[in-house]
Image 1 (cartoon, rainbow, N blue to C red):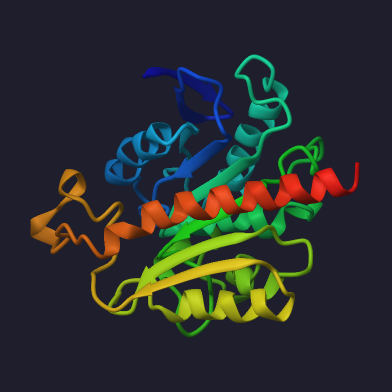
Image 2 (image 1 turned 180 degrees about the horizontal axis):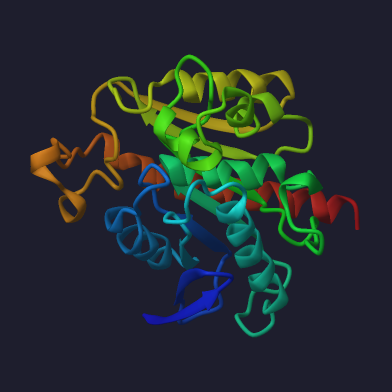
Length: 270
């Protein structure tokens, strides 16, 4: 494994390179309520993607800016995807997919780019909107809504206490036909980010016929990461769970399927 670190636009980027040319790349956004960043949702996840042949990038985005973050984390994710496309030849990524993956508030961040990528009002003036568009997004127990089922503290960190300003970051309200394909999972028992967050998003994805694969596991607390021994946190009841841990191999199957389908479509239209 080759790992190196970059600093870009105030964010730290850990890059994990494959020995062979990668299948694609996955940019990982750890969670933490936009207040902290979880190590358990960073390198352990990157290594799983790396093991399956994916270049993995962990984005340690800004969470400390006061009084609120606004669009800064989203711009940092945008810059990271654009940077990788600018250096595609160097990292053997020419014409290959780039996916965004996020957990909890990091899921909100990844989902923001996958849903809002073509809305210039969320990005700085010089942002190339087509360059930062991900080819798909992987959302683990994501924060989605600013409404009744909101993880309120995450929305406050982004937009402050004003409900109208928080609504700008309520992702289910902005889904349209340009949203990218989605892999989505969570647990029914999650009492930190209620399952309704994912269900609200799922409903909108269905309305616009956006391809989505959704796995809802009946048990399990919030923040399970890989749900393996490596990332266990007994004091928070984050115990290994073989059933829930299947989300990762299922996700890898989903990635293969998305890329195979895109390749088939490309071949037809050549």
